[in-house]
Image 1 (spheres, helix red, strand yellow):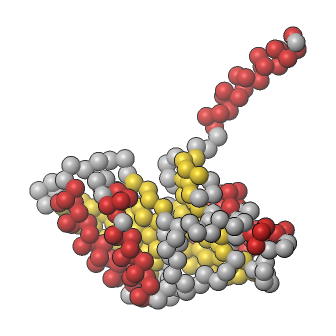
Image 2 (image 1 turned 90 degrees about the vertical axis):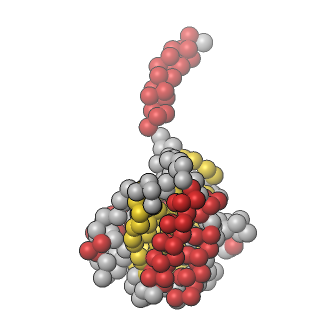
Image 3 (image 1 turned 180 degrees about the vertical axis):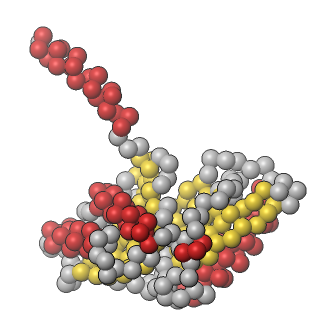
Length: 270
């Protein structure tokens, strides 16, 4: 008894010290979660698809090996386009299809760093699923056991709102929505390497500036990109209608707005 109490006496302070060092996760690990600062958000299943790949395939070990091999190659393969990459590995039913998209203003080397940092998190939480996606601030990485290239995918969707409330929500909306509509048109007209647009607009009276960006996975055609962004714009009221910033995250597209600049360099945009 005395030795047990002594062990607790020494171990408990260590646990109390280490607890704050563990990453803080907000949400459900599989259905959708974010780190506390929302620099990474992820989801491992569709809303209508809760099946793990172990149930979908007779040999989950092969799928996991293919998944690890394919995703781990993203940050290291010099032949990979660091802005947009789409590839697959393996034979059915263990084929893994993956797409990585970097934000349009980010430098290529920083894209590789984003992929490198994102992949371990995605594998940590989604390696036992047949589909998964991670949204980082600079990039998106996703995988599936079915073909995803050129396919519009609007689920799962993740909302990330700013903590800052705005008092003039209607005035803000009257500037924000047309800004997004204009940017969406520009992004949808992009090419097969990049469908991205960024801009800003001022709110009358308050002189606040709204900084915004939109992006589609460049393998989408113009109509699908436009449809994806239009749906996302319509969901801003649910996500962050009374906030000074927010993100609507989907597999095929995303949008973001803030009251302060957040882009890195528009010189990266061709």
